Amino acid sequence: MVHLGHGVGHLTWDKQDDPSMQEVVNSMVGYKTEFMGATRSMGDYFNGYSLIMFFVYGMSISILWHASAFPENQKATTRKMIYPLGIAYVAFGVIEFYNFFPFAAIMSLGAGILILISIFGRREVN
View 1 (cartoon, rainbow, N blue to C red):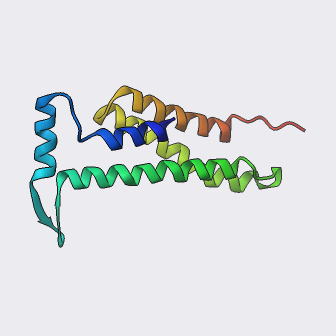
View 2 (view 1 turned 135 degrees about the horizontal axis):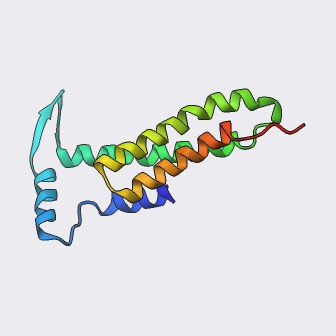
């Protein structure tokens, strides 16, 4: 769901109905300057970071999907592998509360909390 929402947002960020917001977008994509050997606009950076996050979400989905199929004797390895994902998604949620909007933050926090619950909340059954 987050992956799909991010994809739609990525494809539509530069097409705003609000004329004032479209003016901001036009400023972001219109002016380019040289930074570290490349000439780019703020819109280029915004667009690039958005694409990177699209692939981060896809990579996370793939890792979690494959980790869910690891056999019981691989629990320790699985936990070590997905623990950073849980922490990262909780961090994404906190950052999104401060810099984006509540829906994105709730989705990321929820994902992070559920990942952490899957690691620590599972009771051992003999």
